[in-house]
Image 1 (cartoon, one colour):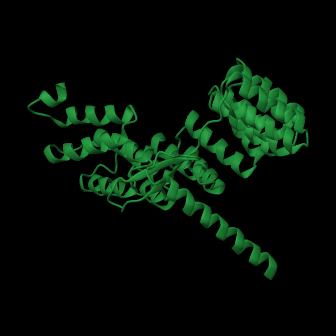
Image 2 (cartoon, helix red, strand yellow):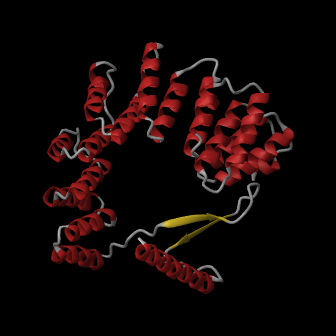
Image 3 (cartoon, helix red, strand yellow):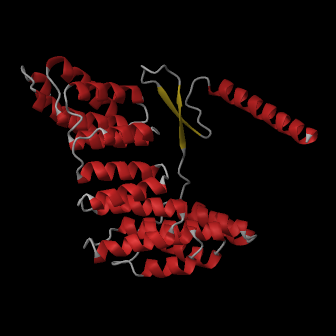
Length: 338
């Protein structure tokens, strides 16, 4: 209301609106505010940091909008700003374009902790372990000291590649070399790393060492590892701890039930499901997104299993069932021909 009543709106005022929308998750409104702002004022680094973050976070906004912002950023000479460069690197990485992330980093005049962390995180997100380690070494050689976020990205890359020894070394360096107290996320990553490598006993022992007790993410990591490697007893302990911490969340119950079923213990599997129903725990609904527009339109649709909200849902399900039947026939024909 106050904003609308203002006769003159400077870029600082527009930035407040764009940032406010972005911070509260109203990403499309942030983009619309930015579009209005550039008609009256010249955007600055704060404008772009907020709008690029919105484009990155919103599944309903096309990357095209981010690329347009990038072009304007270059024209205004703001691509050298570390925070703007960092948001661009993150945007391209999240949208699957790691080459653009790397190009943006390479074009940076100066490389600060922000830009180093952004590019290391980008490659970690894409599972590029060798690139992560190379960049990390270059960063350290440039006398830029990593922070918690940098090291979490490096640990994530180690976890994805199964490089337990390297990951353990990086974790130890946090305390001994960089004097950084690990966050719960670092502990969870180590538990996940050990668990995926099949070192379940070490993972559980590591869990017990976490200051103030294990967090939800670390317990979920251990439970997931137990599900993969079939350790029902350890999985039960992890699941029970999770159920105490978040009794109405379905994840631990479902994983434990599936673990029992996979081990052939149908009685306990059914018992967990009955207990969920008794105390009112409901399975979280998973949503999918489908794009029905062109690249210049924000036209995304969200739907879930057994979703009947669309006026043509009956016809949609009929087509889906027909396609499913055709797929089964094609697969059967392939098997007979083999």
